[in-house]
Picture (cartoon, helix red, strand yellow):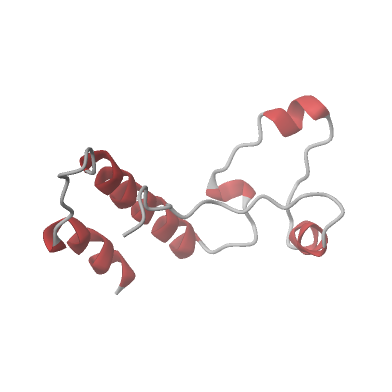
Length: 92
């Protein structure tokens, strides 16, 4: 198993990409200044390209994976099936 386990993250559309243009068509309100780009909020209200259910999945799975990563310390660390159970529950 690779450590740390990478957690899912939110996609940020960047200007000049096809995905950015599609996000704008879906209602994404783009930052207008460098200062606004520096404080982009990754909450669901601004991410018009994903459903609320998928956003919830990302947030819940990130929390479980971060908990697993915190437990995995040192060479003798063991991740058990019970550690992975919350992630399996989210995925089904």
